[in-house]
Image (cartoon, rainbow, N blue to C red; front, side, top):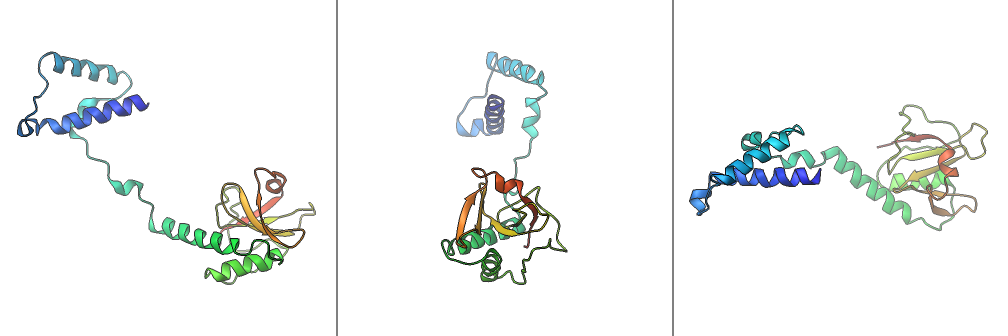
Length: 187
């Protein structure tokens, strides 16, 4: 696949420059060179690629790869949440207080966490993203008994047994992932 992209890119550049060749002092392909290019086109048609159409192709816009405003805002908010939450590492506090304080400090207010599933938000537990609040049922009794904030790369930040805020890697400790009952995106 990379080889095709390189060939296509090179031929696109060659065809784009061909109209300017005389102005720049370059010679255009003649005779055997043109026949070689036609053979190359025929070979690429076998895989569904018509290189002749590249002469009229529009350049790809950079807008196609630029994230939208909401994506940029979300990323900035996630960074603020991660930065703020890491300030609490090692401090003693319960998980609900920790999460509420972190979100309050970054300007997301009104979060209340308890031992019931929240109302009014879609469950995102199948697509947990950094900044989401994760609800756990650790003892298997069907009740929410723990909360955490998703960081990234499988990490969560939370306060656990000794009451100290810590980071846990759910990839290295998969039992955490199995105990997720809900996840909420609050921004």
